[in-house]
Image (spheres, helix red, strand yellow):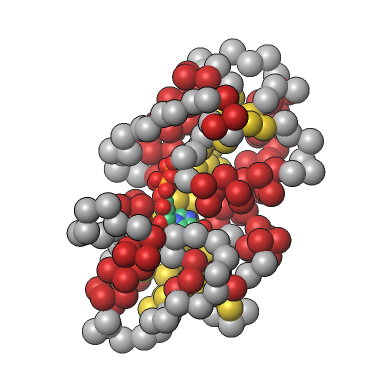
Length: 202
Ligand code: ITT
């Protein structure tokens, strides 16, 4: 079987993908493990376009079948924002995850609750020659005004899984990896991943 490159620079995603792929029989490497430093300009207008751009760029740079994830948080009261711009959602230069969470809460402050929202993930798996396949996943919940929990990354401490009564950051990794948008997208991608990796890599 060919090796899979996890085509992301986001450490939080890498930790999750490693767990999600463990036990699948798929052999994978990270960009750091192959000394690959690549920043892709995410200028697409859909998750698919951005995921495809990242997967193809990493596949061409590494010669490996590559899996990229383009994801985001969509808040209904904000018309779906931050969405595609979730990683860059703050006016502050050099903003971190906490700045982005604070900016989101500031924008929601005067809106009536519940602040329903969902995470979305589109996964693209690309061969160096350009063939590409997609899979998607969503996870529904609501934004809450105070941070809870230490796990995960990004918007996890303010994203409540309403029925569970826990934020994404209060879940054990194993739980997040059963319920999350990324977990659902990986589950949906599994058959095509195994098929692509078992065929000749060109
Ligand atoms: P790569 O492009 O290198 O994969 P990135 O962080 O730029 O890393 P995206 O463009 O897909 O990735 O941005 C997704 C953003 O959406 C991410 O930075 C978080 O702010 C948010 N996000 C996505 N999945 C999340 C999750 O599981 N928990 C919390 N926030 C998440």
